[in-house]
Image (cartoon, rainbow over all chains, first blue to last red; front, side, top):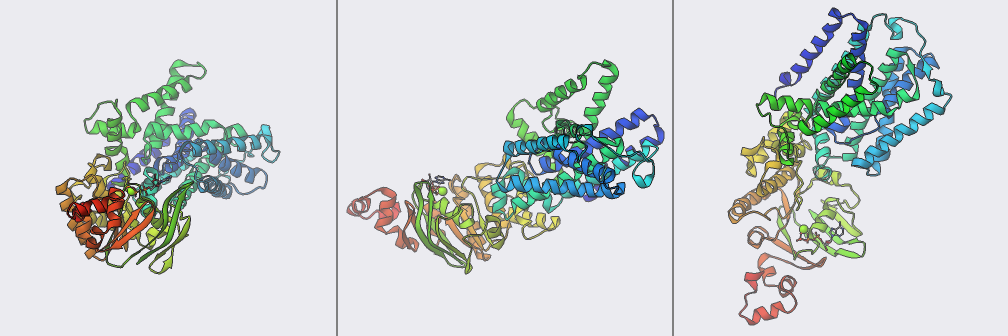
Amino acid sequence: MSPSRAFAPALVLLLLAALIPVFVTANTVLNFIVFTLIIALAAQGWNLLGGLCGQFSFGHAAFFGSGAYAAALLQARYGVNAWAAFTAAIAFAALVGWIIGYLSFRSGLRGSYFALVTLAFAEVFRILANASAFTGGAAGTLIKLDIRPENFQFASRAAFVWIALALVGFTLLLTTAITRSRLGAWFAAVRENEDAARALGVDTLAVKLKAITLSAGITGAAGALYVQYYLYLDANIAYGSWISIEALIAPIIGGIGTPLGPIVGAVTLHGLGELTKLFAGGIPGIDLVIYGALLVAAIAFAPDGMMGLLQRLGRGKVTPNTTASTTTDAKTTGARTEGAA
Amino acid sequence: MLAVETITKRFGGLIAVNAASLKVNAGSITGLIGPNGAGKTTLFAVIAGFEKASEGRILFAGQDITAEPAHLRAQAGIARTFQIVQPFAGLSVVENIAVGAYLRHPARAEAQGRAREVASLVGLGAMLDQPASSLTVSGRKRLELARALATEPKLLLLDEVLAGLNPSEIRDMIPVIRQIRDQGVTILMVEHVMQAVMSLCEDIHVLAQGRIIAQGTPSEIAGDPAVIEAYLGQGAAKRLQRSAGMGENHA
Ligand SMILES: Nc1ncnc2c1ncn2[C@@H]1O[C@H](COP(=O)(O)OP(=O)(O)OP(=O)(O)O)[C@@H](O)[C@H]1O
Ligand SMILES: [Mg+2]
């Protein structure tokens, strides 16, 4: 695939999305778009580590929350400029990612052990942030309302749509570029078979640390954007398992390991969630029921997510994957090859 | 090129490799043979840095590499294949080989170009875009060889790359291995297919129960009573000699 063909669909999609606020001004719609983009960004971070490099995390809240708290506390406690705080928050989340990665990958944790350790880190952070006076404890932290662009606060929600889009777009291009690079080949090699990767000269520890650092930085940016938009944060928002789950379900629904997967997944999930809220009204927890149903459907009928399904539809192979062998077939001919082919 | 000095490898109480020493000369094809469970794969793993030696030293191009991790040994020029093939199952053939090629060619276009060259050298040229998981046994063995070769090694460790191939596939592969050596790659090969070992190797080391029991040219090894006994059991050499010197055929 030529470079222009690899990047073109993403760019077209972004430009179309950027036009939405020009035509739609309803706050509820813009609200929905910003929130969905924040989830998409967090999920893009997860996808880089879990999808590309094969290290499944159950605790991306650790990075989302670290980014969010860094952005909030630097402003609220130290009066740091919001844009500077935002940048520092990304760096801080990336550092947290590197440290968690170093501790767990150094000791050889893989698969479900790694997943559980990330979950444990997120939970410990949540408990600490909930108890500590520095983070505002259970009462949470507020960023002072002072609507000025230099404060990263805007009167119009459209500005946030564009900023969120820019971040999601940048990450989309970054992910696409990685899948077409040596680092991407190394991510895939580590994901598929670590021993074989080492035999070919791949420093698997260094590669995994790169993946988790980038991943944490991206998900941390989502957290920082979240707090900048809502101007309020507490431990259950920042480090709650809700965001760990959002960050991993979106790529699984959308297409794990594909650059567009997390975005497609987040839009599908939250689009359907909003629609059911519209029609099923106030039934509590109905959106969770939808999530569960979608997840089951995705695993049964589209193990490569929406992206894999779209590719198979495009080729006229619409058979659901009922056996293990067709599943691997679809995996290899479909989503997996799309980035690096 | 490679010197293994009294390497011992223990797994708990089991001594898989017992004070084994061997030398591989630059530019040679050297064989490492021995009965099942002799410790050949374990010795390969120690040489390539996948298992830590319990005792002894490994010298590569004069450097002591005993403490180096596997990926640095690969960067220094030691490539291995796995007896139990380890493909990147979710990647295509050319992507598999490109992972090896990226070691010396950071740019994507060059790595992929190099991967295609290596693929056609080992006879995978027609399967570039197939998923590795769809390859036959012989295809997977070729892929192991291709990936290792793509790292442009100085020393290539081949662990039974001919096992599971049919006789005509073996006949095809023998010249490929010779050609790799002729391009300047030193080869140390573990092989049970004796026809291949005898025709390819200049120098053969025999490992039995973790010990090097013999070393020499193919004809010396074929006539060595200790070797015959290691393969066929104690007293076999004498019995064979009595029944009109069939030792060479069996070895
Ligand atoms: N990781 C391990 N842990 C424990 N024992 C092992 C391990 N790897 C190998 N062994 C044992 O070490 C001995 C040597 O095994 P190895 O695989 O090196 O033999 P081999 O000469 O390659 O045999 P083959 O010709 O069957 O491939 C065997 O008894 C084996 O069971
Ligand atoms: Mg073996």
